Every structure is written in C-alpha cells, then in structure tokens.
Length: 181
Image (tube, rainbow, N blue to C red; front, side):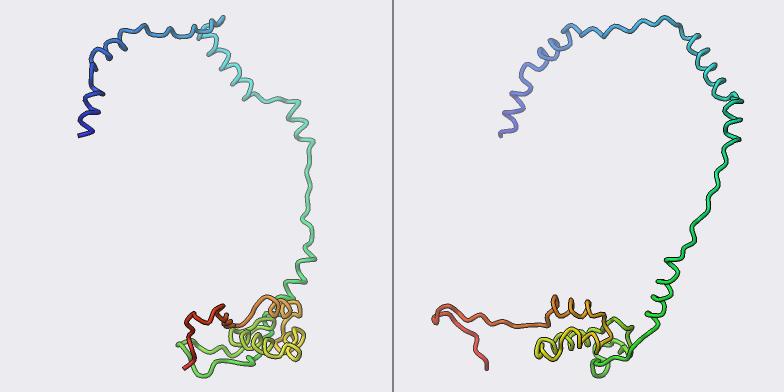
C-alpha cells in the first residue's frame, strides 16, 4: 500500500514539471580561445618537428662515439665458502635417539636426521626431560646430546613447553567438581 502512495506523489503533475524543465533557457557555452594560426599551418609545424627528430645530428654523434664504457663483474669470493659449508652440514646426519614403536598411523619411520635438527618424538622427549629434571637436562646438555646449536637449544627450552594440565581449584565448595574415578 505504501508503494502506491509514493508512486502517486512522485508522478503528480509530472508532465507540467517536465515541460517547465525543457523550456528553461540553456546555459551558454564558454567562448573558444582564438588562435592566430590556421589548421594547415599546424600540420606544417608538426611535419617539420618530425623531420627534425629523424635527422642525424653530427655533433651529438661524434660525442657519442667518444664515450666508451668498460665494466667488470667482481669475483664472488665471499659466497663460495658458505655454500660449501652448508652442503657439508646437510650431508652430515645422525641416528635417531628416540622413535615411535612400530609403524604408527601408517607413516614410514625415519631412521636418521640432519645434524642441528630434531624429529618430533625427539623434540617432545627433550622438552619433557628438561621439564622433569631441569638441572640435569640443561640447554647445553640438550645441544650436545642432539647435535644442536647451543642458542637453538636454549630457545627450545625457553619458548616451547610440552603439554601441561593445570587444574584450577574452585573458589567455593558449592560448585561441582569432576572427581577421579
């Protein structure tokens, strides 16, 4: 119902309003800038400029012939040594300290890892050992045991924690608790 009312109001006296807008005086266009040259002279100027562009300029050509650029690439001495070290480090591998028994979840068991890296089982074992006995399993001992960089072993023990459950006791005794069975 509301759309019918709005349509009636919108279309009221539509023809008279349209005739009034059409009969209004049109605005005058801005005056054109008067030029002193005619169209044929502009075409002549354009062709003369294009001829100047395509002509050879002897003084510029002689100066260009005097220019001689010589460049040599520097010898990459600094990059050759680290690449060789990286290749040697990647080829050095160590046997696993710990692995999962059997063939769990259909994954093939890894037998060795590159030095400076840990398998998932080894990482969890190392973190758990450090959590249970932090005085015996120090970051230095973990680095020596698993062939890690000492700063990586320190970061591992500082920023990663094995799964930990914290039970927060209720504030009041009226709240229900889940008891061990």
